[in-house]
Image (cartoon, rainbow, N blue to C red; front, side, top):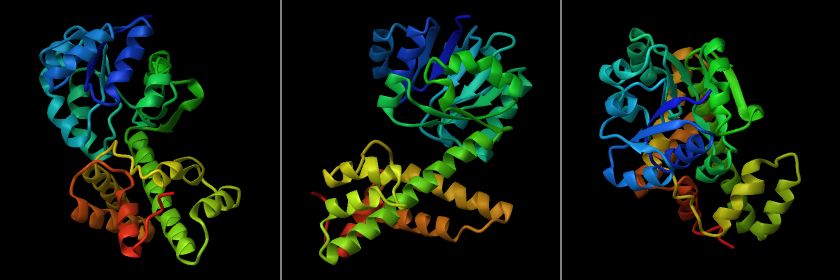
Length: 296
């Protein structure tokens, strides 16, 4: 059945998602703190609200696609949850943390709103073409009820249900840890090979077909070789997400030596470049230390 969706957060990911929900036949009312996003919302066929509470008024689904945990905590007030229709569900697609999401989750439940977390893997192009990865955490019954809606933005085989509340957020953080760790390790290997006289492109091809191959080497290195440090996500937010992983490991008593090393590298990159956009700026820091670049 078509839903009345309140969509809060119309940025690089929220904009294509808004269009997909509309094309799937849902009624969408969107809000963003930036009034200039109204044009993109209306162009997609959705309605524009002047506040998150106004967007939520009478909606049976609230979807948040916000930059980070602090933004979600500030946006999701009691007034927003109180404005939703009876029996509504909140789906958080923000790259949140279990700890930060606990407060708005408690607010939602206090107002009788069911909660599902579904942080995303992928970029705006994946959102536009329905190729996102969703890392879902929450009650299985709520997940099953929301599956048709989630399939508006991806396919069922790309939806992973990790378990109860917090597991989806943590899984997304772990994906980020491994990706940024692979980026750093791959860059170190390529810089060493380059210094020893091996052409980086030749070494990349050799690694891609070996036991050390990864999606990062096969897919993302081409951007780096083109001089693109993937300026689509903020270095400050990357640092905070990596810090959340090491905090979780410390709290749960699991080893985190490598996670600490990845965090330290990105902290140094943040100190060097500032809170600018660039998912591969830690690699730029390694290039500076080596005195060479990996650009083709």
